[in-house]
Image 1 (cartoon, one colour):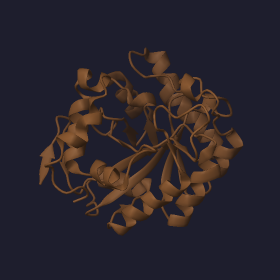
Image 2 (cartoon, helix red, strand yellow):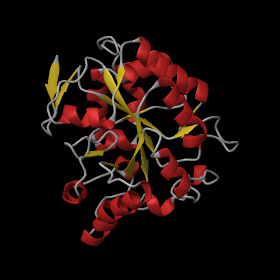
Image 3 (cartoon, one colour):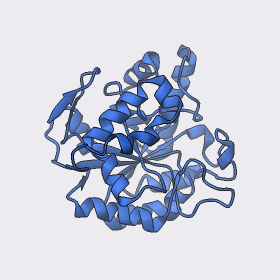
Image 4 (tube, helix red, strand yellow):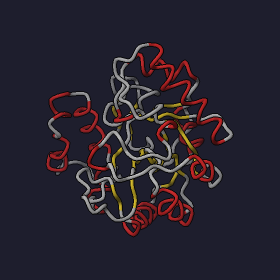
Length: 274
């Protein structure tokens, strides 16, 4: 079974799923309105569940090879983490190493070491400092770019795009000692000039959220702290991905958070993870 999206990507059961995480450990005292915190035990159980269901974790290099035409395993996934919160070295890195799962961490270089400024609900949370990010780069966690300072990349002029795509790449390159190969759009937002800026800067791939549009806006699956094992498996299904893509490209659905209703819409969908 396969479907071809408007951007030319061929969607099939074999296409690798890209998982998106943010924070790890217990939710902050002020609450977790977006469900961004995944408890360490839950994260460990999620990776074990995928392994038990026959899902294979890919490195970024293996994922890129599938984009270039290499055959993908029947069930495969890539773990990505956005922002570079302090909980990544504190909680997530050990779980990933224990499970033998490679990952990609996307960071906004000018914001490192400071508090979250783009979401008031998480203003007490801090990002790793530059030393911590450099240390993570030597653990099997590949470092990518998340813009210059987590600004939404819509309607930017040429100078702004250069800052967030090329200069941010150079800054992370200097920090980790190798040239980053991948980029994740802050908030998952992008437009044609933003995607072109990634290509011009020499990235191998760019990632979005629910707004897939070719190699420089590959869709990702947001994993929430409240996701049950059944929900995680549902999110891995092709039917869910097709529904998420449709909602991501339909503004009234996206802005009204209609994706919360997707599980109900997919009750008759093929078995998750097939």
